[in-house]
Structures are given as C-alpha cells and as structure tokens.
Amino acid sequence: QINNNNFTIFLFFLCNQTAGTQENFVFLSHDPAMAAALLRMSRSSSAQLTAVSRAFTSRNFSASSTSSSAFNPEPDIARSPSSSFLSRNSPLPQDPKDRNVQWVFLGCPGVGKGTYASRLSNLLGVPHIATGDLVREELNSTGPLASQLKEIVNQGKLVSDEIIINLLSKRLEAGEAKGESGFILDGFPRTIRQAEILEGVTEIDLVVNLQLREEALLAKCLGRRICSQCGGNYNIACIDIKGDNGEPGIYMAPLPAPPQCADKLIQRADDTEEVVKARLQIYNEMSRPLEEFYRSRGKLLEFSLPGGIPESWPKLLEALNLEDHEVKRSAAA
Ligand code: ADP
Image (cartoon, protein in one colour):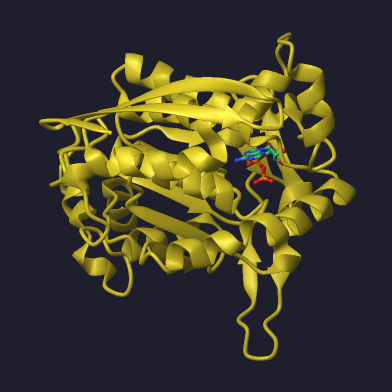
C-alpha cells in the first residue's frame, strides 16, 4: 500500500492456487477507505472487483465524503436529505455528499420493483438500472452468452456473478459516458456476495425492501404483459385477497395496456407458474438474507405495498419523504 496524498495505489499479486497461475491487479482509488474495502473484497472476487470498481469509480465515487449515518432511513426517514429534491424541477440538486442518490430495490419476483424503481428514477433524475433487463437484452442478442443465459434464466436460476458484474459494469460505464450519475439498482445485489462486492466499491444510501403477500406475487407474475414495441409493462391480473388473521386484505386492479400496445403484448418466458415458483424459492434462499445484511447497516426501509399503484405510490413517496408534483396536481384536479 502506497499512500500518496489522497491518492492510494494498490498493487495486488493474487495467486490462483488451484490453477497455479498468478494474476496482477491494480486498483486506483481516490480514497483509502475504498481502497481498503477493495483489498478486503479482493479475496473473494478479485477480477469482478476490478470491473465493477472501475465502473463505479468512474462515476465520481468518493467514499471519503460519504458516511453511512448521513442517510439513515430507519427509524427517522423524515430526516432524509432527499426531501428537498422534488420541491424543484430538474436539474436535480446534488445531495450534501455531492452526488446523486445511490439506492437499491429489494423484493420478490413480481412485487413491482421495476414499476416503483422506474417511477422514482424519473422523479429523482437518476437511472433505473435493472440487472434483469440487462440479462434479457443480452439473451435476446446474438452475442456469445445468449443461449447460455436463456437456459439459466428460463429455469429461474441466478446468472453467475461474473456475468452479472460484467453486464452491470458495462451499463454503468455507458451511462457515465452519457453524463449519468447516481442510480437506482433493481435486481442487484441478489446475494450476500454481490452485496459485499457492491459495498466494497461504493456507498449505498438506502435499500427499499418492497413486500407483498405471497399469494399476490404468483398472480402478478402470471398476469404480467409487456409491449414488444415500446417495452411498457402491464398486468391483466385482478388481485383481490381478503384479509385474515389480522392481516389486511389487498386489492390490485389490472393495469390494462393502452390501445396502441394491446395487440403487441408478450409474456416473459420465465413468467410461467413452474419458473415463478422456482424464482420465489431461490429468492427466499439467496436474496432474503440481504434484508438482514442491510438492516444491520441501518439502511433498510421496509415497505409493505397496501394495494396497486394508485394506493402504493403516494404512500411510498411519503415513506421516502418525497413529493411528486404530478400526484399533487391530479389529486387537486
Ligand atoms: P425477477 O422478476 O425474478 O426479480 P429479474 O427481471 O430481476 O427477475 O431477473 C430475471 C433473471 O435475470 C433472474 O431470474 C436471473 O436469472 C437473472 N438475474 C438478474 N439479476 C441478477 C443478479 N443480480 N444475479 C444473478 N442473476 C440475476
């Protein structure tokens, strides 16, 4: 480790003992804390870290100026510094830490991570990056990974960390080139290992854990329809679950496609009953532990969806201490 003012250079000689080969890695960091995190993580995932850290650091990552206590959604979400974001229109003012929000959405398949993450991304002016979308783009391409990915995804299994991090890094780098900053991640991290890798390279401000009764999840996945032309997401399921044992009931109206999309609707190949059940099981095994991971770091915001978008969106904004002028306008109309 060589400290040179605020510029720390790490040179790693990592021996791959099984293969008997030696690989050298250079990590550049403007901050010793990040460099230390990289060092810590290098043991588990050296090559992946190289890729993802390059992508995150090129986004003006500055661990030294951030602190996990600066944004503590629990228990006092009202102190969120993002509360002022929406009282003005774009350009988005930067938060006190001199960068845009870096949030993660957790939640079971079908819970609506994509829906709410994408609404918040529009509102906050940060990109919504869904690793599931990146995977689907790749499997629909003619690239070398396509057939391999199709097989994994269509069984509801997780894609390897290496592939995911590669796709994510490329997406972050492309965004950076377009001037993007901040992000709302949806579908990443999905395992403790991915969360540790992420923690090693950047600061996550807030993790929103969306929750919905299990009975509704399967129905929502099976009812999901996507416009093959514009990519719009719709749902034909009408969910009406009565309350029992003190649990409130839940009603979610269908989300019909507009006429211009109605004859172009397709279903995701992994939205079959068998595959959704496999995805739910894998979520419980591999991703559920992330709740405790982020809860113990004081970053988890639990949000139980009270119903469909009309009921849930204003409540979510309230929980995040955000305002949406559109919501206010339509309520006033
Ligand atoms: P879901 O509706 O199950 O949350 P996504 O659209 O997020 O689905 O992801 C679709 C598929 O892409 C997953 O079932 C998995 O195969 C793959 N995938 C997406 N993100 C990850 C990730 N972080 N790690 C591993 N595999 C992933």
